[in-house]
Image (cartoon, rainbow, N blue to C red; front, side, top):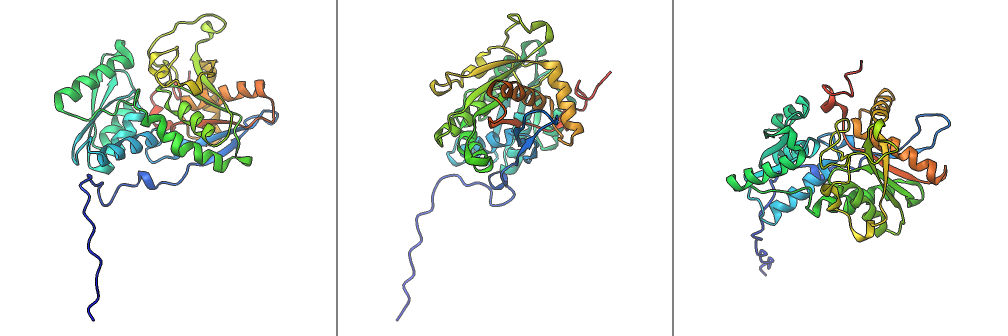
Amino acid sequence: MATAFPTRPNVSTTPRLPDCNHYLDRTAATPLVPVRLDADGPTIWCKLEFLNPSGSTKDRIAGYILHKAVRTGKVAPGGLVVEASSGSTSIAMALASAQLGLRFIAVMPEGVSRERRLIIESYGGEVVFSPKAEGILGALAGAEAVAKERGAYLPLQFENPDNPGAHRSRTACEILGQIPGGCVDAVVTGVGTGGTLVGLFEGLCDHGCSPTAFAARPVTGAALGGAGAECCSFSGRIPGVVDGLSTIYTRFRTERAASLVELDVPDEEAVELARRLIRKGFPVGPSSGLNYLAALMVAQRLGPNAQIVTVFPDRMERYFSTELFNQA
């Protein structure tokens, strides 16, 4: 008697990802480690995001956004992606585009470190500079213009809900599986788009935690104790982090994060703390110093038993020509 074989199911017309090479959706969770720099200081739980493939936490949003864009047909195989970023997102998008067989253009403000440009170009990306005086807002306008002219896909990290969605769906779950007791009292980060802080906050809330979200705002010593100058550009000393109440990251404020607490953090001390972390064997950038210093400030408020989580967002190599390594 002949064997009946099942009929072949209908082949989906959904665009497929490349059959090999892409690995961003297969990487292991980054470590969450307890860090205490001083013997009598508090322990801060730090997510080592510099261990992601391109060296930053932005791999999470780049992989999440571009995988989804390919699957939903927003960008065709071999298509062009254009994004505005001062650094880490552009690097992550360049890597993810290389993985997925896409072309990539980064629009960046003039004055970013040479290392960041070289990394992007090494992955096959192209860099277009916008006027330095216009800051990230000029880069955003430039990216929109390039995308319109060349028919490119524009991820729009500053307003794309998949930005915090990547952290809500995965990073927060990793943290809950790694921290003792599965509970977080506070999550602390500097903010650029705000995607990391909002995504972590919402993801932790989804799983029954009631953390307080703290946004670290880098300020100069002269601004401490005063109103300070609010602006829409990134901090001069802490790349990728806003130094004012910017419409860039407030776009990601939600009703659930309405109780967001903002901390003024001395930027010079943050850079020095990043150097201390490097000397302790953590190959981090300036924003890690900012985040850790802010977490220490939170620990003073909440007490020694609070479980405080922060992120070490990126690696030191992209800052070799910056103030972080140019000590007098």
